[in-house]
Length: 110
Length: 115
Image (cartoon, rainbow over all chains, first blue to last red; front, side, top):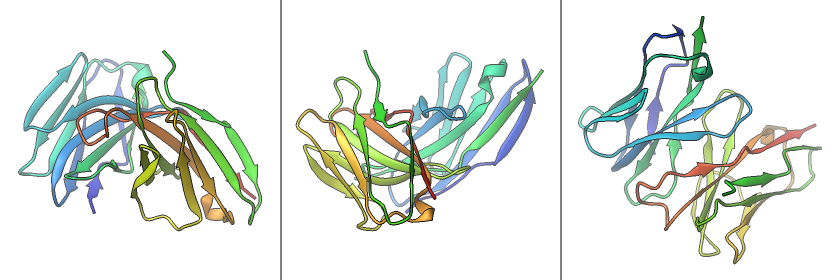
């Protein structure tokens, strides 16, 4: 199985930058996903990494290092609406399921 | 274009009862996965259906069963409900088998409370 660790909570100021780290252990890595989940709502897909490096999508970027079993999600120019839980999920090779971390609750303050 | 839809939104049951939750996948998707999400936790994989067959199962007891219909919609059934089954049940759909980089798209979930 996979062990996926991410911080429980983070707080940042509107307009600032926040970096959410995720470490994982897997027997055969086949991709890492980041999802955003507002309270009481569905998780929504943010990004996918399968090769090492940085993927940028507007204000959100995601980085992967397969050798270190490490990823981060970078949120720039934080807005109040970015207050949510951010879920890191890993897919193992020859696996159909996603294995999720417990999520990081980000609170953006004015 | 409708996304993943789940019904009902909320459900209250008592211990020992049985429940059926329903899911319609996003248009163009053929694969449905079910997850259980306890408060403050990440989703936990229950099982996945593709071509009307269960093709992978997580660490859940046989009380949890499912079905996929020819139109790709799916049901999750839970028998002999326990207090610990109280959770948000999420359905996720994806395209073309689901082992590629195609992301899984989630519905808003069914909030199940067991009294």
